[in-house]
Length: 211
Image (cartoon, rainbow, N blue to C red; front, side, top):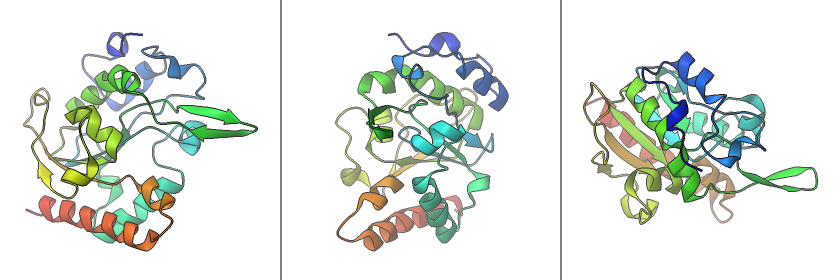
């Protein structure tokens, strides 16, 4: 396995990225997945949200954040005063990694090799979107940019500097990390508090965008 570089167009547009990604063989996850799931939204956009990977619903529908976690994210964004339609939403890894359990497909976190393989797609999306700010949703997104030692709890809600070279023709965006909306759904003890924390982080994003 190498990475997605041979399939990534040099001058990315939403259409060219979507078309090129259909043929990507940068890692083995393409084989069992229903389809590739690229980002969606405005390009360029002031805000880019980056999650982990598509889930079962996203894999079947071919769009990011359309399942239960996506519905929760939409609600949190609206409560924070951010229009999802004004942002670009994507994932670090573009194929659903899962294991089969009877008729169910159980989510498996992508391995570091899958993150590395998919990073050229994310870099192309950043080049295309040229965001002013980036929200990292969860640890996988954080590790993709900051390395294996990244921990959400150590930097959550704080503005961080962009760790990679600036996208072609643009300046480096600021970065804010929060939990993935699926972590709210998994919360057993106090889901309401977990949701409120997500909204608080997104309100900080809205305030930063407002200047």
